[in-house]
Image (cartoon, rainbow, N blue to C red):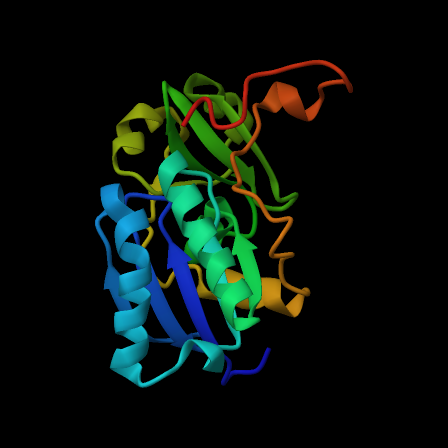
Length: 219
């Protein structure tokens, strides 16, 4: 994609939720929405932003969406909206992981990024391998092994103090770079893309036919 592509980005997975319009990597407009009612507000927010900058939906080049991990309801609402807009206007779509966005925001090339998954668990991404999994919070110290650890929620700083984590809060617009990269790689299939629930570490090595916890059960 070129530096002049018009993008709509939807992010309703985390503690902040909203929509962004950008020209290439440059954010030109954004609007927060209440996390608990994103499904009811997101389409109206998109309409207001488009009117604000004088664009029509069909004039967009792509729709980007952060598809998880995070709030179960938020993931589903954001992804459903992105898919609906793409299908209605014939637009391309790029779905990106919130963990990838965190690594990008922190400019981290080696180490781990982590998000609070609730129930004492964490969503973790190893940056170099791009492997993501769900693990117990007390397992991270061994996983980090002295490597850099970036977290997005302040509450994890004390909880993971032994790993000396660095806080990098996420904001609307942080995902633009990851969306542009995904579009250069070919984008995401609108019909096949699902929410990124992130599996337990044991599920990564599970043999065919074995069962594990249902997707999203820890969210």
